[in-house]
Length: 71
Image (cartoon, rainbow, N blue to C red; front, side):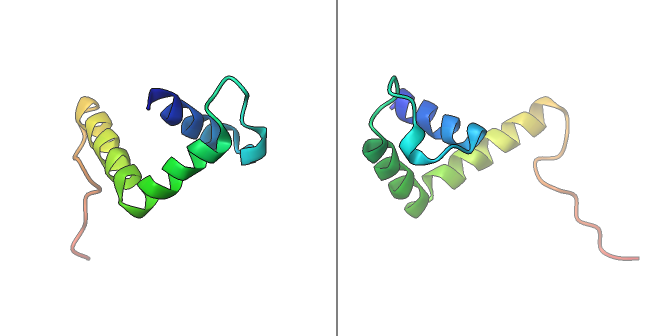
């Protein structure tokens, strides 16, 4: 699973097309399968939310954006 995540991070970071995924990572069909599955079931959004909140907590910031009630 770690290699799947590495491949997804590589795609995101480089913006390369799926067909140019390096050969030392899992096959693109496998990576794409998990991307579609985790997108559909909310896994990627949940991981992103968790990492964002953890980063903000470590920086001493509020977990989410502060909302102002208008002037």
